[in-house]
Image (tube, rainbow, N blue to C red; front, side, top):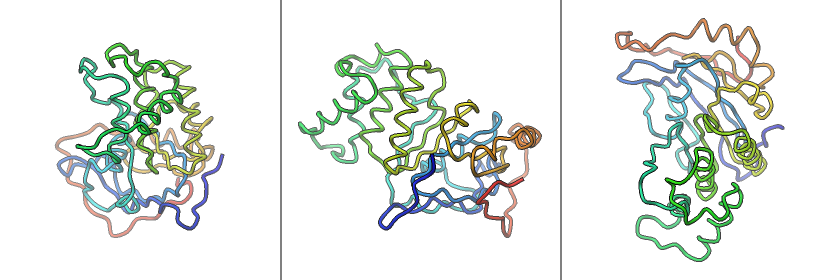
Length: 263
């Protein structure tokens, strides 16, 4: 399945220009330059500690770059599902109330939910297989059911860009299959979906584009060309633990723009 090409009036591409990310100027991702076309379905993979979650956090606007910049997201709504949602499962909130938080962009802090909003919530719950769960407390949900509810919230956010960090970790296979089908529907609608994943077989089966990171970009492009043994071995060799005493990241004057696979 190929990414839907940009058309007149479509969202802009997301361009990462010499992007370096880290904490207290100690880099976690070095000098990344790629362009993600609108409607792309893209996986981000790499060894543990490769900077994958850091990259998605920056795309979500939660982390300022050390160097470089991100283009194409300033005026777009972005839906972000972190690896660990941070929701206190003991908080007394119903599944419906959780899902309807996805309508924040429409109702704001003081707005009221309408009949149409509640109908949209009902439809979103149906889309993720949770019809009849709306009035249940989130504390009653299994891990897979909770992830379905969070995806229903993403549906109501209806953002053109969806960022997912390990969305299928510790989730049963049936839930994973159902949510992957939802990702494909978003892709068909022209949404840009970027997901951090660890299951390479899953990436090969469902994601046309892949970015392989190991602090630095190892390869970027068509998944079959990126996920080779040689690229993965190179990523493992490039991997290094985070070092609080590492030198600050030095800027580079220029960096090749990666449109295809880089070796």
